[in-house]
Image 1 (cartoon, rainbow, N blue to C red):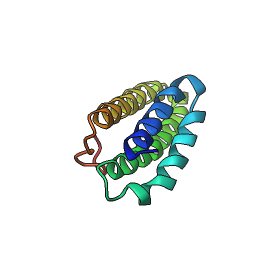
Image 2: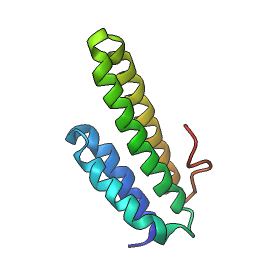
Image 3: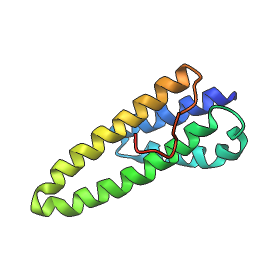
Length: 109
């Protein structure tokens, strides 16, 4: 498969994870880790870094949100993490469709 297809696959799996409660995101994460070295010299290497960071930061955010749900502030955190994750996935997908690199793959947005 070409590099662009790998990036599109990862973002599609992340977006489908909304329905699969994160299961396909794990598959996307594995693909991102496996393909990251191979795609490093292409614009799509930045997508793999961005996807890996998106997964781990989201997982931490979801975990904190669930724990803090006991004091009700967690629901607000879960909403913020969900919107942040959705934003990053859509942004990654759009950039991959345009065959463009992620400008700052280690940034927060």
